[in-house]
Image 1 (tube, protein in one colour):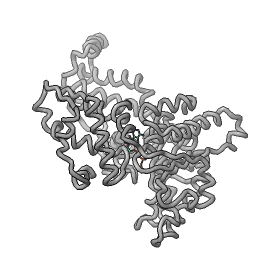
Image 2 (image 1 turned 30 degrees about the vertical axis):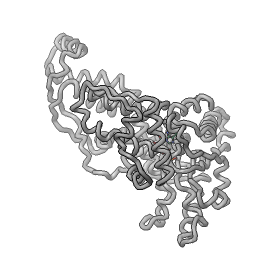
Image 3 (image 1 turned 60 degrees about the vertical axis):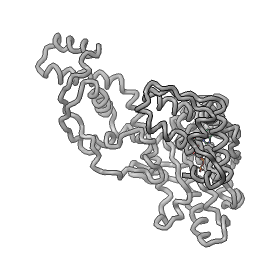
Image 4 (image 1 turned 135 degrees about the vertical axis):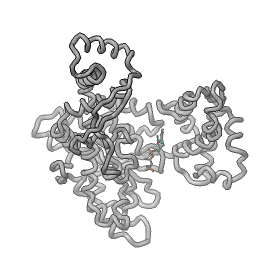
Length: 437
Ligand SMILES: Nc1ncnc2c1ncn2[C@@H]1O[C@H](COP(=O)(O)OP(=O)(O)OP(=O)(O)O)[C@@H](O)[C@H]1O
């Protein structure tokens, strides 16, 4: 939960997303409404339901990004699901309630991570004691331990190799915990699942030889886990899902009955019917306990090129009262996306090449050329929005990325010439189509 005002939320989102003001305002209000609801008395609080949002706009213009950033800002459990997944062969009849169960799993990981941070100071101390014992031995007197403690703090012992008994973090369950539709897990690989489940798997231990410096992170993680009990983590996570959870339902336009003339209408409308109770508020049973979905925020999204929002089931339309349009991105937007955001690609490439001691700078003309080519390919091949910038940048940097380790000390200026040299001459859409890859 955050107490940021809508204006503050928008300005946080502005750090990562260019334009799309209406969508930013809508999600900012939705988040603020949660805070407002929290301030109400018990009786009224339960009556106030979230105003869910329908985002309308082409692919790659920031719909997911805005929602994901919002969730991050609010420390809210977040899950993205494609509505069409429930119409696929093999998925027919697939339980849409699984969305909530997956959200709970995400929330548990996230809660554990947050709580781990909170207990880190304590865990740090405990880890220090274990390292000292490993170096000085179990019999060491206090004075000896103090000597080692000083050395440890000064970093003098960082390279010393010690043997430690640590939790076995290899994950015998393989990818069992992968969250469908979320490559790399919903947390973007933030956590090591083996790590998370290590304890649940009966705390098997292995002896490991590590340097003191390496052992610290491992031990802090372990000590932090000891301070967290699973019951508390689960309770906090369930509460967080019910009160703060955000479900992003992509491709909602593709489950409209009238989206095209080919069959499958029934199953598509069926998906909408299945989704309805979740959005209206129901109780989903999960292996961690029941979860009420009444106050979960749903953000549905789609391009609506063929179907219209009015083709959605009327009940569903009623549950998505806030409509926002996101516009296609222009060449000018691409220039801003390349340079202005905190995570701008130009910054990323400069930093990455910096690790090889290659100093990369971009000229204005270079950036304009990158934006231009991205816009052209989008226009003539397929419009995939800002995602095009990734494919163009990767192509332009292909040669440098490969040879950078041999080029330490060099300064590389990415100007218009560099861009065209690395892209080769572009004759027509045939050439352009190479960047679809
Ligand atoms: N307006 C924008 N400003 C900055 N970056 C953007 C913007 N729009 C898209 N991007 C970048 O492009 C990528 C794709 O955007 P995003 O995932 O939000 O697409 P989307 O609109 O949700 O499309 P889809 O419905 O196909 O998933 C992201 O990495 C995002 O950072």
